[in-house]
Figure 1 (tube, one colour):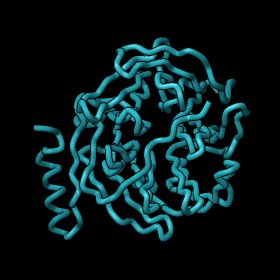
Figure 2: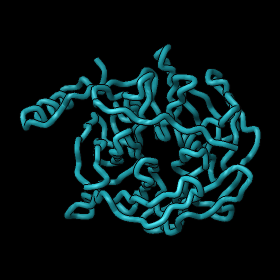
Figure 3: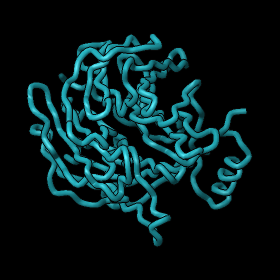
Figure 4: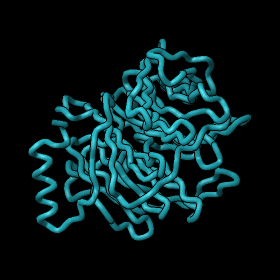
Amino acid sequence: MYPFQSSSFQIIVALACFLGLTMSYKIEPLPDSYAGLGEGPHWDVARQSLYFVDLEAGSLMRYDFKQNKTYKTKIEGETLAGFVLPVEGRPQEFAVGCGRRVVIVNWDGVSPTAKVVRTLFEVQPLMDKNRLNDAKADPRGRFFGGTMRYIGDEFEFRHGELYRWEAGGQTSVIKGDVGISNGLAWDEKAKKFYYIDTTDYEVKSYDYDFETGVATNPKVIFNLRKTSPKDHLLPDGLTIDTEGNLYVATFNGATIFKVNPSTGKVLLEIKFPTKQITSAAFGGPNLDILYVTTAAKFDQPAPAGTTYKVTGLNATGYPGVNLRV
């Protein structure tokens, strides 16, 4: 019996049905997909594979859809892997966040070890208590990603920053005063960029110029604060569907919220049998499967750390964008 079939999760589903909530979706674990701190899911169309990281193990992972098999590699000499982005035009090269460096890693997608071949750039070289966290390429292939406090209290020490980088250029600071730089998503139809700093307990939208990569006019579009601070939900990773709805993972909430960013209304709550939901990305041959990473931090019990697929959402998303270097 898989963990998602546990009696407690069946009770949740039954209660939701009793209350008349929509439970048309199905949640299933991916095989051999455990990651102590799973993050950064990225769907690669060319290889029909989901790439993600086991962040604090310095490992990259690849789920092969056709084989229904997960591969894992350890990056030699590295202890952290904050994200993984395939490099455009170079099938065995990936941009990975190792500490405060964005490095290029060579991996064939199968071998148990991978190597750093060069450093693309470094941020905050003197901030040895910080590290890179979530990152993505925007629809034009630019790098967007940010840092967070790795040693100490991220809520007290807001020393992180959000950056933009594009081939041939320097890094630009998009935003300072960041606690935990996290989810990112873009909507070309609405000309919007969405961003999460977990320590703000909210999702912000920005007007976005896709030709220049400039984000302006921040606005809070989804607030996860509760009556008591100890009950605030922690937004983590983020993705978007083709209708412009956001999918917001909650690190302490066992839930992904499907949100209409225009109204802030929650359209659906996707419930999981584990608490620490870290991120999500659409994938599969029809881009209608929501892949979800989780974590097993602070002694969370099984099935914490499992990576899931969610089907039956009646929604499609966008594939991951390769980084142009």
